[in-house]
View (cartoon, rainbow, N blue to C red):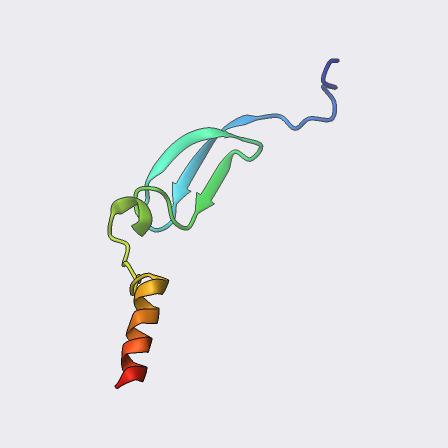
Length: 71
């Protein structure tokens, strides 16, 4: 089986620009320029600045509710 050359889009070297921090890098895409809101250089999950909103496991929350109800 061979791929049909007429139905596949052409790939170009694309420049990706982050609108938050201005970082640019190159990749391949059907578009020649891409703009992203957040990249791996400024996203909190990748930079380690993410807030942890974990308030405990389900068991811990259950135990706290049980202790409050026993009072």
